[in-house]
Length: 180
Image: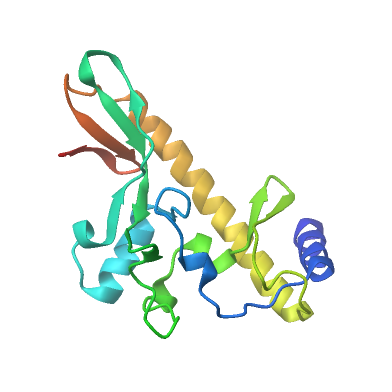
């Protein structure tokens, strides 16, 4: 309980109030990559009815291996014309109830017990104790989900061999061959 209280207290000191400006949903794909896990992808598919290939792309940084093997870890939400594909013209998120953890907790993340803060115009604004507690709960759930995903990806990675000349993505559910 002490950890939750300490993080919430720190968030209250920092302050945050979403300005609903959508700045966090814009930017070049590589720079503003929203990493999503398979369970998050499932929620988005369920919420939108879209196919996986219409929602995500492989994480854009590849590791080159021997004999033409290339791989990357995880998936990112698609970004078109410098904005997330789920950012509507009115600046609202079209998958708000199914949005990924990173979107739920932005501009904050946890590195162990340390809070990392991304640039955002809402940082420094007043936040209620209840809002800080809710954000803290989301941050801790996000951290747990990310740790579980990382462990599962490590297991998948260590149990697969990339076929010669192939490019693949590793996530918690397997090794996915990608074309192009």
